Image (cartoon, rainbow, N blue to C red; front, top):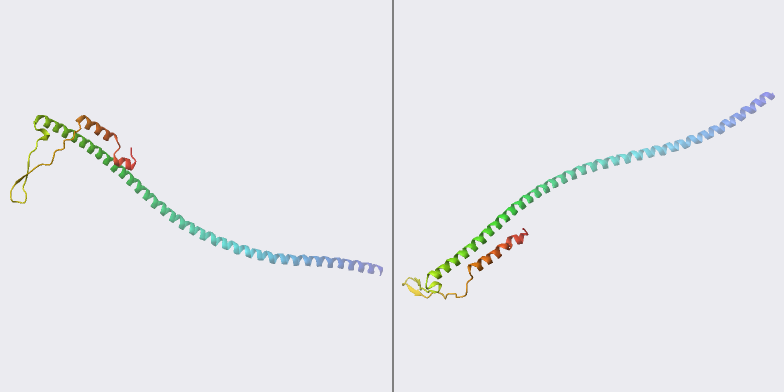
Length: 187
């Protein structure tokens, strides 16, 4: 009986230790279940956040493509406008150069004409005894009643420039910039 009592005591002791271990194990399982619920909730929130991020990325891609196409169109339009402006600028420069050359030729022709007119007037004054001071009456037909003589306008007797002075003045004018080139800023 003593052996059975000792064996019962050992058996009771082992049952108490087993109960304590089962109790601790049960508590750990309860904590694990609570952690699993929190983990599942966390996974659900993560899936939702991932879905929202994916939608946002798709919207961003669509918006980027749209903006990219708009920017490309604007760039092409601006490039075409820039090309047009460059061509117009080149055309304008060509026109300005031609106008400047025409202006220079016109100035030279006027200077030559003045010199020729003055030399012709000087030759006429030398060859004609009355010269430029001779006065001849002008004929005016009037209003159809007949012809009547009208006295010419008075002659300007102010001293005229010699051909050398005129040529010097024209050389000064030719050396100056033309009005067109100074306004445009060329030369």
